[in-house]
Length: 115
Length: 114
Image 1 (cartoon, rainbow over the protein chains, first blue to last red):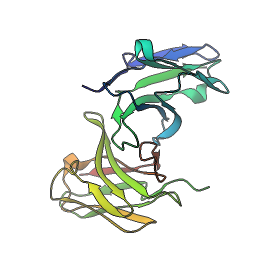
Image 2 (image 1 turned 135 degrees about the vertical axis):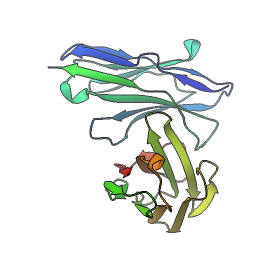
Image 3 (image 1 turned 135 degrees about the horizontal axis):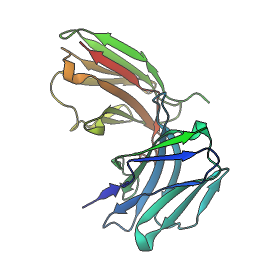
């Protein structure tokens, strides 16, 4: 059965520390997409990244980086030199097959960055 | 480019009243989704439209909920009559042709039914 697990309910770090948010997924499909979304305290859901199952290259965008490893069914998200503005709930999600509108969501990880 | 636009951002109403939530998808997107987010149940897909046609409404809780998409740039989600358990954040999202899986969300409407 398809599933997305974000085992870290809440993480608290001091500003400028690096932090990694874990995401483990389960699927029987060979074609799938993985996503990360950010939900800051203001409440909106912000799309961060989409990765398809055929592309295991790591991605870096500024202070954000993503590590996709099919061998461990993980799609982890690292924030380097964290800032207070990074405080948010981060959701990992999975979509199986091609252009499948049904997203399977993780429970989210609440990240608190202390000044 | 403008993102998904939702209105109102906040709504407080009394039980039994009709509530209408509005959404304008991103221009050029042909898929539209309504979600509900609560602490207990997380994010739930309520309904999915493609090219203005409802494709999957299996997530609509009950007959009190209805959604329409009269054209490519506007959708409504209506609750009539509203109940306290409908209190939640309602999100609208849209996606571009061929990429229904990549959904861009609006800011949400925070609904409180007293």
